Length: 439
Image 1 (cartoon, one colour):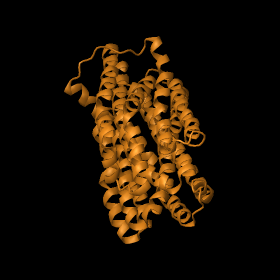
Image 2 (cartoon, one colour):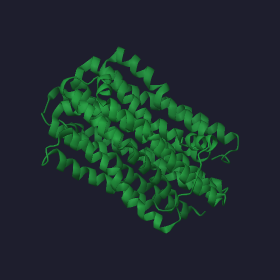
Image 3 (cartoon, helix red, strand yellow):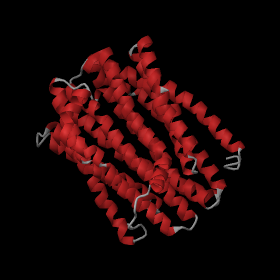
Image 4 (cartoon, one colour):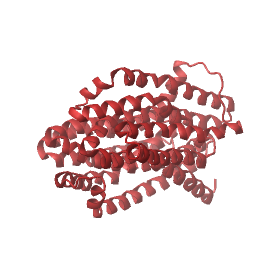
């Protein structure tokens, strides 16, 4: 593939996917803003206690979608069209079956789950409401992620972007309508969020009229399901880590600064997740290009696309950090309806420290997806699990005891920096082995 064509495809896939992912991430940012305006600090606390489950659902959906779509692109690159279609059917069926592990607990045990998460008083009821509705809509969230990934790999990144943006914008509009004119409170916020993937799926349904992507009768096998899960594991870990970090930080911050601290962290964390979504979109954008090139033996393209992605990630990190550093006060104030000076101080300080992680996290997210796109899931798994569980958990616990809230904020950038060093070692080892022709 010529250099100009590689560059053109890179910007076409990544720009549209990043825009779509930014829109998709606005599900929660819109909830954060409208809940802060309509329900105050208690609403923000309830949202932050419940939101890890959204990350878990998204993570499983992306695991099945990215894993299956990677296999789909590789098989197509090898000319195995029927096998590629079976990969799609397998992933869709797995998504619907997996949703049961969320729907049943959500309908039966939302109140108990709210108690376990630390919800008390008014916060308890709002947290239970959010969990009950969110988990009931999990089939739509999971299937939407799967179909988005396959439509993108089926040569329709613009339609995938349109579906993500359509779902997101509908969520924003419905958030406002349900919370303010209708007075539906927390139920209205989460109901709007649950309808968003349904609207996205309606938009995506037009792709199936072309018959290039189609359902086939597909019996699930342990081997086939395992391949999907293994290739998609980095995406699962990346999303689930966000949820687990939220849970861990919630408990740590409750002990350090109470509900007000959790509300301040909620502001910082939800803005952080929007930027991470951009990096995730960048990684997902290069996946079809890398997998298709690797499957057809075009290793030069994999090298060039990866280099472009790293340059883009670092540039984006610098821009985002500079803007957020100098505009920290007005950014936080937008979510601080009551003008609480303590909440403002906690969130502004956190934003300036926590966001230094962007200088490393973008490269880590892209590298994990890159490894999996080359059917090197073990290397991608190592990068993802280091930044998701292995490093940040002990660092957060240790640093918070030494530095208090500053330790909580600094644990993320330290985790990402160490992970980047490990990723460099893994990449160089792969290059020496000749797996990417010194890519």
